Amino acid sequence: MNIWIAIGVTALGCYVVKLAGLLVPAGVLERPLVRRLAALLPVALLAALTAQQAFADGRVLVLDAKAAGLAAAAVALVLRAPFLIVVAAAVVVTAGVRALTG
Amino acid sequence: MTSVGSGLTLLQTCALSLLVFTGASQFALVGALAAGGNPLTAAAGAFFLGVRNAFYGLRLSQLLALPRAVRPFAAQWVIDETTVVALAQPTRRGARIGFAVTGVTLYVLWNLTTLLGGLGAEAIGDTDAWGLDAAGPAVFLALLAPMLKSGVERAVAGLAVVLGLGLLPVLPGGVPVLVAALAAPAVLYVQGRREARDGKGEAR
Image (cartoon, each protein chain N blue to C red):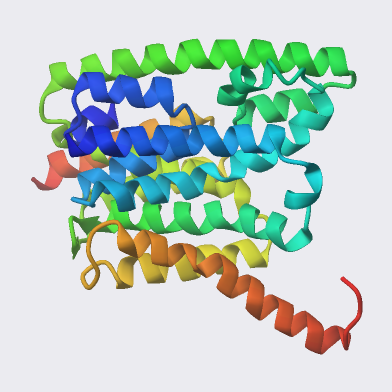
């Protein structure tokens, strides 16, 4: 049930901000500070989420096969590989390391 | 697919794709719930990731000049990809067509792959053994990489990683990500101070 609440709140919130951009007069959102903050917020959130999902299990910090998978994804990104290849590299390397060590 | 692996049902996963339809927010919500986060803090993180769509809408509303009655329907498709395609078109007609075609195609494909991925994950069972839990961070990294254009972005990302990991054992689930978001205003503030000092009040 809790998950449905989270889905509902997220869906509504994300829809409202999309619509707001189309309806709100340009002046409100065109201030330089607001624009730069909006560009940097996703950077902060994505960086934190990447780190947490790769190096944490619940609330405990861990270093396991996922770290190798993330490194593989980073290499793929540096080589300008397409999105699906990047994700596949992470999955394959993580599974491989787990199979070898576990 | 990562979603079904994180304890959401297939129906919940598909509802998420159909209703939220902005990838980063979906993955963030699933990730926060999987980490045992409270649904509201999880939703807040996903919401902040979606805020950038408002700025896309701003650019698009001038470019597409849609009638007011159409806007509530077009809004659901205001995402990274449609904005990029529409902004790349030289004419308004091209931009409208680009926006509509990209919107429909992505909406159908995204939701189909969600369904197939969800079915696949249910069939596989233990998704961790297949390394699928690494897909989440890899997706985030792929979304993040093109944003790291200058030192400012890298500073924000670095500070956010430190905050996100450092606070994880201390604060309740979902909250450390929101605190890490404060890296953005913090770095902007420091940068503003530095520019004011170096430029002696020179206009930016």
